[in-house]
Length: 183
Image (cartoon, rainbow, N blue to C red; front, side):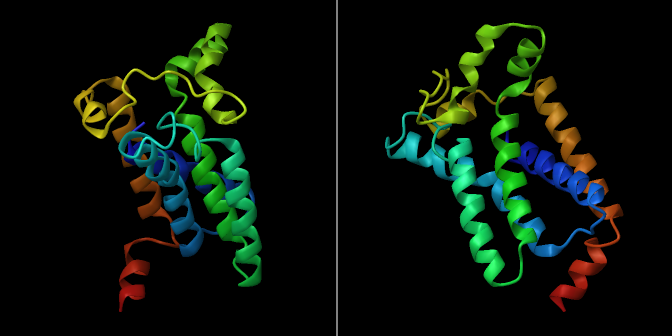
């Protein structure tokens, strides 16, 4: 999934959780959602593709173990500054990122009982399980050359539009709030 798709899924997931809990959206948890939605790729891709420290662009920060460590540390720090809700935002961003990287083929395959699709889920438990062998997982340029306008990419743009509409229609952090904050 591309960055805008990760951001949209993380934001919409966070909004659903906030509404289910009867809370309102707040600025710092939303910042944490945005950071968490991008963090796995911002760490793993350069470490794998540029520095060859990791075996794949989906390993260290895409793992549920890393999410658990990051959420625990964030909770400990945020509790000290009375901002525990930031922990939920970061957790939603990171976990949603890792889960949607499974992609529709894997998810639909598993739902149809195609258990061979499990091979593409192993990064979620890295380093206990080896990272899957992705076909375009060696450089930024190789990844960009595979960029094509297909139905999945259009779906991601659609999710982004939905997320922007939800954000603008929310009564907490719309454009008026941002303008007031800047002033």
